[in-house]
Length: 445
Image 1: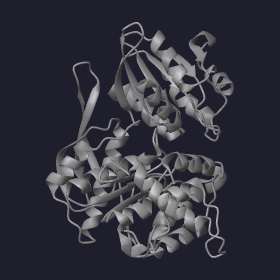
Image 2: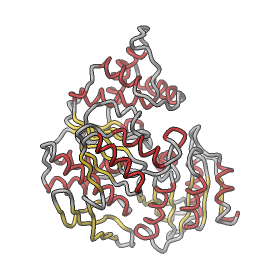
Image 3: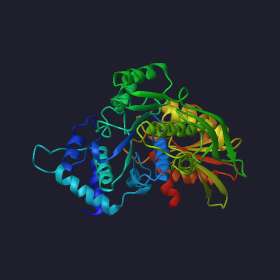
Image 4: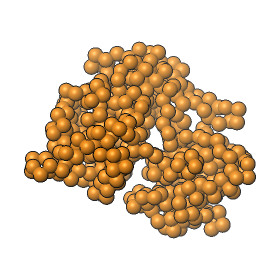
């Protein structure tokens, strides 16, 4: 199978949509001989912050000398971003090889294996197959949606399970109530396991506690067992935040003056959850030295999450562009706070906004648009993209029509924002990781 054929097959599989259940992935892994004994797992779910926690963990464990597999979603530009070993994407050659092997089982006429896996199921099987062949010691798996019936929840054991937070999302699949969503996410908790969580809502936390009690699993909570304090944003010569420092008080250890390069105060909480998981590994007999922990935190980078770029528009003016994949009200609230307090205080903001139609558009717009002086609305290039005219109508509840522009594509919207921006303005591209990915492609051109 050639790499172009791989891309065609994966593109076609995206149209199969979402299918909850573990039947397909179990059949694929059974056919390829992958089981619990192949590698150890850190499993991460939650509404927001999953990828950031995964990146921190991957960086720390790599510094500590472990061979680390990382599986995240979605991707920004290249789907191979989702599958990494020691920070390197899976090669195109390996993708072609492994997908050819999977297709042998997918297309076999034997009823035992005959199935039509979804895009996410195929990607998950590819990742686990690659990790097995690459002799990964620890695999960090980010849940795609929910937890209980997610394709990543196919193993009976994990070193640590992490539930970052719980908010309303994917309600058509997970349920409309926080309690329903919490039960789905608590589905990754294993018997006699270790759980680290940043969940604060009383109802959601009560459900997680109940599952942990039934499964005789130890629970450690951010704000109770894990604490951060003395947060300090470091500014560059242009008054932009370029790093953050904080103190950590954890399950066993305390550390002062830890440094991260990911921006926004919410990333300090994500870093703390990762540190809690590292401490949880000690209960499994896995030790990480302090110098590896510090280096791993500082070296961690995560594209498209409050990523600040220096750009030059067609008039030769320098402009700051912030890319952030905030896609729901809670994530947009974090972005708003970061823009107000940390990244760009006292600057005029031009917003490039493209949202998916299955999101809470009213609340997302209400969080971010009042902060901005101009908005360019668009629609990301996906079937799930919200019509730009509907988005414009919502945005105009907060800004006059003269301050709201509309462009067909994300690239065009970004170019329009760059044209009208002055040197002291900031352009913020957000609303979806699809939007951010298209913006990054446009900037590369």
